[in-house]
Length: 407
Image (cartoon, rainbow, N blue to C red; front, side, top):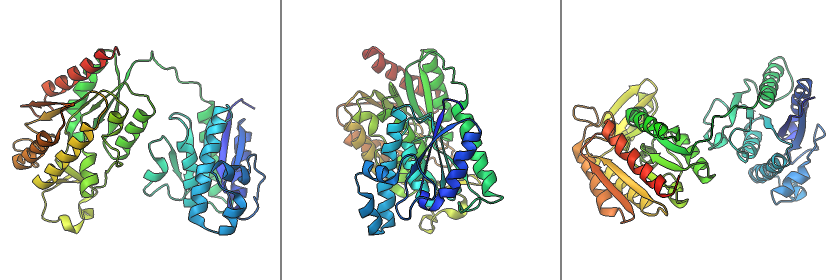
């Protein structure tokens, strides 16, 4: 056996046979296991290493009271909190090199809550019946890997045995892989990008890398922004180049790439130096053309590709976005600058482009000028966001902030 340990977390009252199979497959591959029971109803079908009573207590509840209540929603929430606390403790004790789980929606909610309690980079694999749907709540801002179970997790059969064996092999491979040979640690800068702001972000990233910084680029897809801000909250980042704030559009208007309510607030709350722009505030994101809600028929719609349809923000919406951006940045506790590209906030918000709308852009800019407080440096440039000079100006300001802090 290796010195690697995989934690298995699941509801052993209903999934005991399946977890016994996962445990046996991992042991066959030379990996130690810790089996955690997060069930609440019937006795476990497989003996755990960490029992349900201990898990419930870690979540602040009594297992007998929880079981007698027969409230599935409350049970899932309580055991999710308890499993997260148990997994975190096992990790801190050196008894968790990765987490593997399998189940339906309830077990997925419990297990992925536990996985999200671990640092990025610790292997996390969830075999789930809901892996093919919207997995945002299960993945969160972490690096949880979702694997479709194909059939329900209901017994060991010719299909489930192969799927679960593959999952065990994948986890064994991850925890036993040679350590990553990391390059010399450099200060980390977070940046946000969208297809329509790629030239700006690429130029900025390359300029920062030439100055000795490592730039982590996050796709502004809702989960991307949330993941970035989760890493900021965890203290990983030295500075933020938030070029693409488009997720605010989807949160305000109802698009499919909305970020959480704290988007554009976390860096400021932590006092992190940040340089921000208005990338892609001209658009709201939907799926294929036929998925656009009927209430938006008649709006300026642009089919970006067969799976993505963009909708131009109106002057009224842009004014509200300006107020939102101003409010969030004005609350920052650290140095913050806002760069305004007066000649276009995206690649298609330029003269001749499908989203060129000076009236809407002016409404955005006017709301910012009116509502920004004095702590925010405002830089208005007669440039489009993707012009090299715009990227360089943002980089220069961020480096100024970082050097003032001795970074």
